[in-house]
Length: 457
Ligand code: AMP
Ligand code: ZN
Image 1 (spheres, protein in one colour):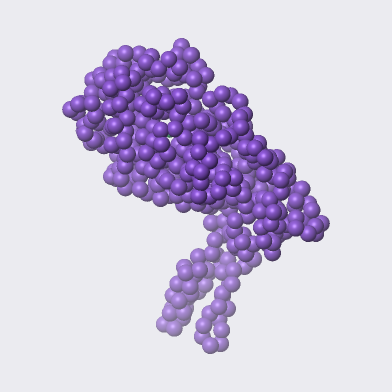
Image 2 (spheres, rainbow, N blue to C red):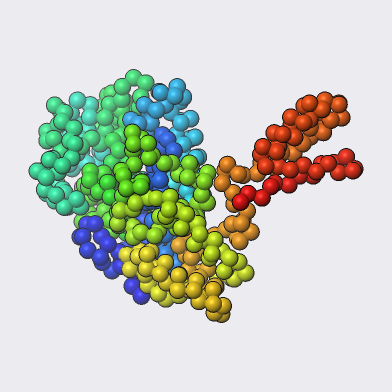
């Protein structure tokens, strides 16, 4: 079995051979932390988690290093913090903590390193100084800009010529740029914006451009060159093209990453997700109504490079599938991985084909075939599915029906206290409040009260 991955750089599926098999290295662009991540953002998180799990299976968990950064310096962050009237650090901390909870609920393993941009300003400055010294960058009005004309094969990843890139991208035209395509490595900060001492002898304090972050963090944690660089398809140009230009020019290397991998886009019920259309769904909102694994399974039903049409019907189907798998594998220990399943994943993460193999196993397990349930469990688990125990799965409730045990006990105590004080109106009110929550009380002879939740159909 050979791992093959589609490489955006060459537009072909290629055999994957790590630069160093004892240290397989993957970098994926992470979130900009200013608001809850949306369901489109969940796609790269889940897709590259499956790849991470597969690489760990193939090369050994200690031989794979996965880095996913956190962008905690950005104009959107500054704007949101000002809007909410909170310090930037408070906003980024809170958002990052929410993000970590969301990805964990989607069944994703934490990456080996989650570097933050603001912890890598020195590395960014070092790269900028190098680019300046080698004449790939120039200084203009307190900015440092990358000069794309200095790099003959700029546009190689996006497969576009300079003219096409200018026509296709919303290029910011600024009087100080030598060329409209030149992009910012460092810019001056306005009063009140985050600022650091600038590189290249610039007196005004400033802050980094977006692209240089990832060149600096991948360098620090993975080295000058590495194996896989991932993200959503929208990042190919300009973000990844520019990262690649910076890193190759700074280190004088032929490559930045061997493989560039990009997931397709997600649409909601057939439409582009946007706040104005009212179909913008955060991961957090979905997790209130669906178990994380159902979201994960629904996401993996499509091949990662294809667009996804995200529907509630798809989620319902995924939940039903998991209910069935859970009931079949409740007592099974994970067994052998079936070859069809691993072959499918090794063929450019063909998850739909992997599910076809799992559905075969499900049919066999349902007929009582020995070992099929164990293979089903092992196969599902390598994709990060069937992680909860059968009991945990059965206990899952949507947030609207979740049982707040501590809250219920508090109300019961308050009711008993009211009854003792002969405040019957109050005790009846509390009984009604509990009944509205679906809680039935039974007053025992010994003075205590037991309770149960009415079965929800
Ligand atoms: P952003 O916060 O916009 O930089 O996005 C974080 C990650 O989510 C990037 O890898 C994006 O490519 C990816 N992404 C954003 N929107 C979508 C979407 N609708 N479908 C799939 N991936 C997306
Ligand atoms: Zn990046």
